[in-house]
Length: 194
Image (cartoon, rainbow, N blue to C red; front, top):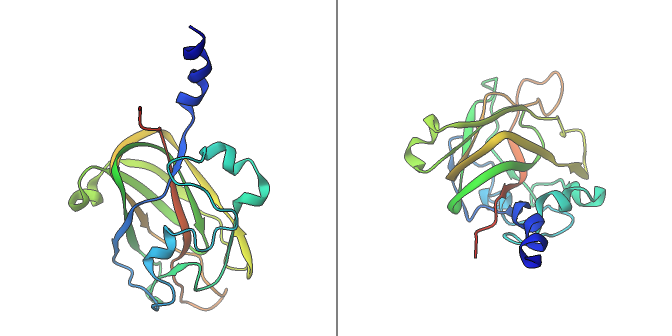
């Protein structure tokens, strides 16, 4: 009766889920100050959230919550590349198989991105494509920058997420080098039925 009706809206709400680990990248890491873990530890996020609890859409409707702090100690930074366009991936483990609807990426320089979601980390390169996106250049924001929320056309089931970049914005216009710089990556997933 009434309980089912009251619970129905909550059942459809997506929660924020931080990956449990960063499996790796083929882009290298610039320095120990900007490790892969900075993408999953909320180090740059200005307003904390509770992974597995916070409602995804509610968090991002608050304008002050969408910013992350820039800087090496808040972000992951790949090795510098002069071989343009930058091309490489970063792989994440969500800890268990989930139905992923969206990603939120605090991104500084990544540009052309394909997101793949799959059940096997060894075949992520051929896993189903969840979406293709062109990300905004945030490299000219020295202090803080806004999130990119990337909605998939449909939810994709999987435990592992690959961010596959085929280009990055130049750090300085006219200078032919760049890094991949990411602040935080969060999935929007269906809650686990209790």
